Image (tube, rainbow, N blue to C red; front, side):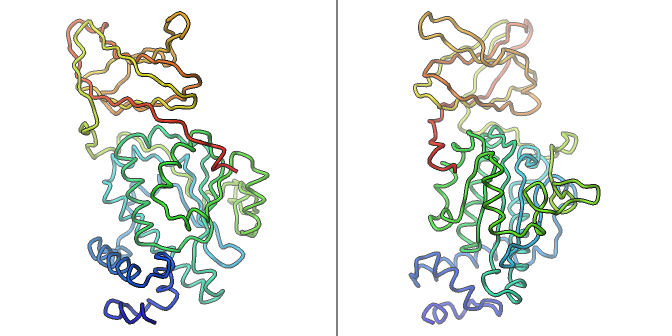
Length: 376
């Protein structure tokens, strides 16, 4: 009642007691902090014109490449959303739409699903007024998220969710996680509230375990057969693609945004014609991740990574030196360091006797993540 009185001037007809409780819980029942959070969020919605986004559709050109869908409803009547990460082409998406457009799409989707949950709560009670989500990480590729614009967008979306959509998550299953996902999650969870984290269950590629957990929450007739349910497409496809869009690689001919300006983290060098640039980077811990991101101006260049033998100093190729079209799009990659060692990064222009090559690059060693602590 105290909280309601303090925010009476900004409340809308749909803001019932359950809505207010979300903000109070998010701020551990501190009514002053909850008021600030709610007021900040409503100002944020005005800036993004969020209440009018339902009048605009998701751009048709990007729709087939957004891997998500409504599967059905869980045992309490809450909507079940499935996201298949293997079909998420962040690099391509940000060459077709802007980061701002992507944020607007996420606002619209979250608002639409919350409206559906609100309708479900009228039939099933407030326990249905939240979302159950399955993130399928099969085929997850960390490389594209090491590209700075994509990484920044992911963090922006997580912060947007935490600051403006408190307490909407009922349960989240992250399944089929590869080892490299542990590193990504150690970064992501820094931006997620502990209460939200408590609702997240993470499973390796062990279908017997995650199917058993999912089926405790979601009836079989509300779940695609691929995830242990009974739903299929008319042609028998177990992934239920008529409802769960699988996304996919965005054709380069669709690219319209120029995302190729070097960021401030890049080092810029000129590799002379007929010459090469080679430098060492140390990986002192087992499980560290060596990541690279670079682009060249105007023309391609050879690139590769060598590994030094600690006993005799001999170098062997772990990423074969080859010509890459880094003048057309960013070259992004990573490898897991299986032993403490030193790597040599090579930009090779010896095959070109006419042109110097300007290269913008960022090469990093990322510390190992603890997989066992987060993966069931």
